[in-house]
Length: 91
Image (cartoon, rainbow, N blue to C red):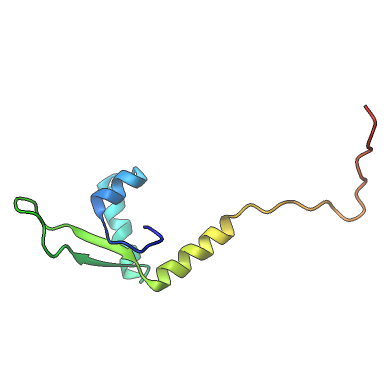
């Protein structure tokens, strides 16, 4: 999904994630059922192409992805209290 909250079709998401359709579509269905994504059918597909099922993040989905991103941020380890400082100027 994109920060701009654009509608994306499943094939595009499969290409971006590298997931097979048989893996991706059940995931998209579960995320939709849980209110993370919303879905709709494409309104006016080009002649000769079937309608695509489109997906985008809901407001709850945006909040959820922000929580995941924040939790995934690496933290800089702090030295333990009372740990010795490295000696400087020694080679």
